[in-house]
Length: 298
Image (cartoon, rainbow, N blue to C red):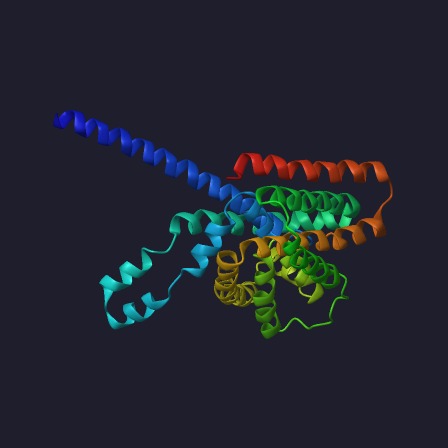
């Protein structure tokens, strides 16, 4: 009898281990996609998180981090320190952040090259991905009610006007990089608003790409610190909205995505040479989101 119970426990343990490994790899893949999106002007890593079914878990995990463990640790209360730390969703954060970081480091040069040399095709692809993301998210939600049109329209107007603003001539001081990190990360976790586009408006996008390419650690660390503070603060507000006003919030986010199409559209019209390749690129971008949603969405 004991042998049978041990064998059953071993089988359950093996299944659990395989599930953890598969889930870890899946989350890492989502991190790669989010990191790639976060350095593209026009696409939000939050959009990728939403269409791949990880958004609400991510917001909940970030907003649930309690830094009391630092105080407990300094007081020497290691038991309460551990109890506090073990509530952090490391199963999500470790593979996801690893994927995001790796994608940003590897893809920054590639994205910069594509935007410089294949501008219309690149932005047509982004246009397709943003449009289909809005469609996918709308399909995930209930039918749009009349009461949800105001946040949809407001989200559209907000993003449309925001991405149409001229770039500000802000210097690249450490304080400005820190502040830009706070603002950009808040945009990155909102589906529809691109953190990279915000950095463009703040005149920090190309500078941060250059810093990543040349591994300027001081600038990267200062920007990252601002991003950390921004995401820890803003995630609590987003979690509150999703918990109390989910349908309104989702309609607002869909409006953001549609309004944000202004940025890739402007870039396409300024650099287009031939309509056919642009259409193909846009359709490919449109289709790939549905592939991602089918593969990763839950």
